[in-house]
Image (cartoon, rainbow, N blue to C red):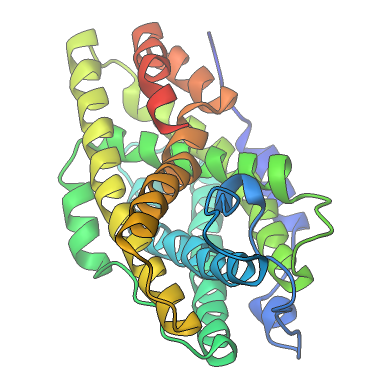
Length: 303
């Protein structure tokens, strides 16, 4: 199986998508706190039967805050990795370099967008939401793994983003329009990033033996474990924020239900939906069929 996206086409598409952070969040647009931010397929509030409808709405918005914060965190980790790849030795095609530098510039813009969203959300929501970090510590743990495993994780995140928007957000009129706009404009540029990441993964994997690829896959799973550990902590922070804003302390029984439902919600959102995306699996298969088969064999645990 051969997969390659033309750098010229990617760059042309990227240049047609021309938006600024100020246009999306800096010109008087308001978050609508009467509407959900997240689609139910990701927020999974219906499983929290001990919450009333207003509480479910509040919790959905807390999850919406965490969703964009997690994206900001991973893009801060991805950015230097992409910049290093763009400047690697042996690159022959200046269009390829330009495409990856465009990628890096857009990731930087996304970080700024999500930071401004978080600032605005906290001001309007009125309750502090603790978040995982620091970024440097998480980045150090992730970057200790094989570069190809890091690239595969990046590809996973890019196709995950595409799946979330197309499957759950696009044309969803129930969501806060401002929040939907953030996701839509992010999706526009990530569509090109996913193609670039596919090329990067195949370039880094070229010439590696099956034994080397087995070690790469082990490192990909290690990175997944690092992310999962952080996500479970964020789920706890989100519950604590819910308790603060509502003034309601969950009972031990409610906490157990919450942990069960939201642990799986976070795992599906950030792990399962990426591991099962057909384009992600297609790239793994192009590297080595066993890599796709192995990921597919365990992905049900995260769905």
